[in-house]
Image (tube, rainbow, N blue to C red; front, side):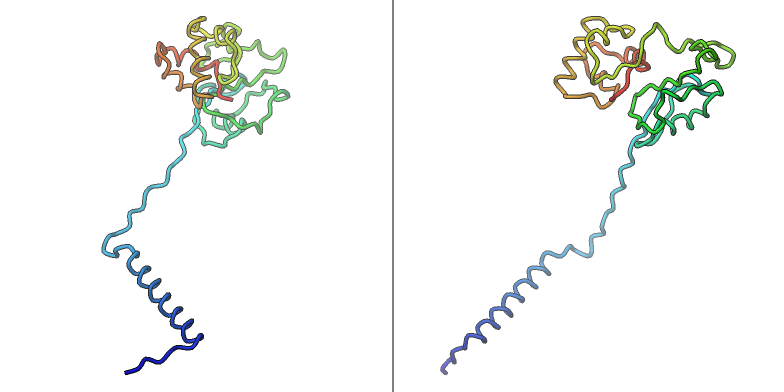
Length: 193
């Protein structure tokens, strides 16, 4: 029996048919086993930001807000503003970050930087320490924090240089000599920028 030679179009068609058959076989071989059920993983829920708010608000303290929140959202979470609040210097649309402290100022002459919670006056500017951005603070600013001297301030700067920037105030716990008590003591004076 003699085989007939294929013309050019027949060779091309045979090539396409052979290629399609190989691709279909490869597709069938790579399909997942239908007897094994798919497992859906839970979606990651972003952790809440903890913000410390003080000053001319109804309930000063630490509040948890979702990521992407603004100063206005933290004020609402704290129960709202007092009548004596001065909003001229605040940007209510500014985004907040974990560990940040927000001081709502009083109108001048209405309150002496003090608030009353349950009848007990609280000095909101303890020791004259201002909020310090942890990722930009100088050695001198860090030394002004309660319980932080020259050595501990140097350790903070070394750790910041090593890691690039802190993501949370709690990152300070990774530094040798920093306890939870110390971090909680300086937390109200620091924020992540």
